[in-house]
Every structure is written in C-alpha cells, then in structure tokens.
Length: 211
Ligand SMILES: C[S@@+](CC[C@H](N)C(=O)[O-])C[C@H]1O[C@@H](n2cnc3c(N)ncnc32)[C@H](O)[C@@H]1O
Image (cartoon, rainbow, N blue to C red; front, top):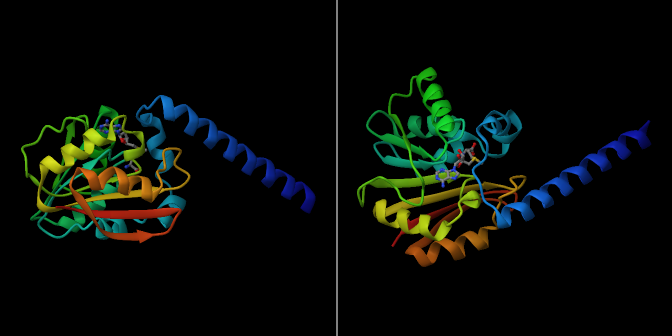
C-alpha cells in the first residue's frame, strides 16, 4: 500500500514538473493572457494560505484614502481586499485586457458591497489614465504574462504620483513566475527603487517606490 502511494505521488509530481516546464518553454516564445475560466481554479483556499488577500493589501503599501491601480484582477478576490484596505475615502481601479475577468471582478465587488472599485478594459502597455494619478499600483501573478514588461514599467512610472509605490506578488507554481532578481533588474531601470521585500523564494512580494 505504502509503495503504491509513493509511486502515485512520484508520478503526480513528475507530471506537474513536466507540465510546468512545458508551459514555461511555450510561454517564453508566446505570451497570452490566462484564459478566464482559469480564474476560479487559481482562486482557492490553498493559494490563499500562501497569498492571503488582506496581508497582500498591507504588503502592497495600501493605506486608507489611497487611489490604487490593480493590473489583472482575475476573479477580483484581491481587489475587494484592497478596496477594504483603502476604505471609503479611497478607490481601487482594476484594469484587465480580458473583459470576462472584469465581469468577475465587478460581480464580486457588488456581492461584497465594495462600492469603491471601478473596472476598466485596458492593456497595461497603454494605460488610459492621466500622468501622476495613482498613489499605488500592484499586481499579483501578472507581470510574467505581459509581452512587453519594460513598456508596462514605463507606464507605471508615468501614472504614479511622485513617491508612489509599485508592488508585485508572485507564487512559484505559476508557470510565469519570475525570480525576484529578474524583476528587480526589470523595474529599477524604469526609475524605481526597491523599498521592501516580503515572503520567501516560493511566495514573495516586492515593493518599489517611484524615484
Ligand atoms: C494569472 S492571472 C492573475 C489574476 C489575479 N491577479 C490573481 O492573482 O488571482 C493574470 C491576469 O492578468 C491579465 N492580463 C494579462 N495580460 C494583460 C495585459 N496586457 N493588460 C492587462 N491585463 C492583462 C489577465 O487577463 C488575468 O486577469
């Protein structure tokens, strides 16, 4: 019996490793947004143990009264936590390239009574906002699937207020997971300095400040 269980576990781990390797190689050459039907799959209790929504809202530097931008909200679970954190005097604007992700976010916001959330269909490469409009920008397991992250970083620099913050949270099973060092080398040249880092190799948050 014990042999059967270890055999099954070994096969399962091998399958997961092979799948992740295949997807990582594929996505190196061809980036595309996560399909919308995956949103409920990645929004699960196990994931929330490693990336608790309320804790991430704090780690992302959100404070009451702030105007924050979330890129790629997916199911909107983290958007609602962020909206609670910035409070009635603040606001969270969530943008996504996939309209059905925004529908999910808007539905969750309504169901949870979060009236300070606005959703906008937009590509992170060309943000439809005035310069210096946001106190904070954050994204969770998103930057790895952006085809031109350098261009996105320039947009973040433009729409942030002086001293505004930019946060990234990443989790290792994500096939687009970037190493923290890779992300720092990408973001700092766009005019940011690393302010704080949280977590560990498998689940981390990097908080940058606009210089
Ligand atoms: C892996 S999902 C993460 C969802 C959510 N942040 C979470 O952690 O549960 C990536 C999200 O980024 C969005 N996205 C991908 N490329 C984008 C782009 N170029 N501009 C805006 N959003 C994008 C996807 O549609 C999707 O909602």
